[in-house]
Length: 328
Image (cartoon, rainbow, N blue to C red):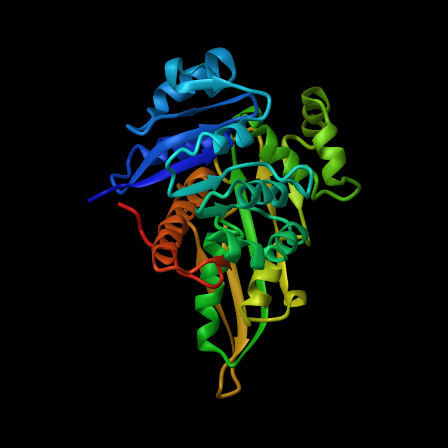
């Protein structure tokens, strides 16, 4: 069996968790990583422990011996190396809100062909990616968006639950996230802050660590998010499940405790052909971390994307359109 060659863009808390997960996957091999200061690549595979050590001691994977390179533009520099990568997980913060689309355009411009998956959150950011569909097709890129926990795992669960009904009346996604130390997920926490009333993506991006810490101190470490601009709505609408107005997403992030403040779940209410109203619920186990619920589906969708790409299917899909393949 030839392993799928995987690249990671972003090596903060989520990217490092993805690297640790890949160490357990014999079907997937980590061969390239980029952070904000450099990149590392090796056709023989990269060691997650060594990568994390480089990050912890030096602040960049670019310090990983002969495999690492320091550069002011890591993504462009890595693409210029023409490294053999079948698919990339874009474990990047979408700050500013145009960032993920600009990364996708860099791949298009580079001439690289392969699979891209993201765990993007905002509806408006997904809309920007959807506008690139023709460019993805022309470039030979298979892009799957919204492949994390939500959107992602819970979006797919909602799409499956909808099959019992002739009309979907509502989809409510509620998440609970617990992290022991918010500084391990600086970018993710800033993205969540951007969803709070009175904050924008630019405001959240420009906040210093001290300002973030002060905000969290004032809330007891909790971020309570309601009626979020969350891409589950556009993905379910695009898949023909229901109008985006019928989708609500919210939750609580505890930045001081690894235990979830509440159970992550999706509830889909619909009308059956007999005229009965019922609700399907799908609840994630409290023992599974945010990282497990984001990275696992992302790599499952990456494997699906590789299968599509090898069959010559290019363009953009989402977690509501496809099922992830389990990667061993």
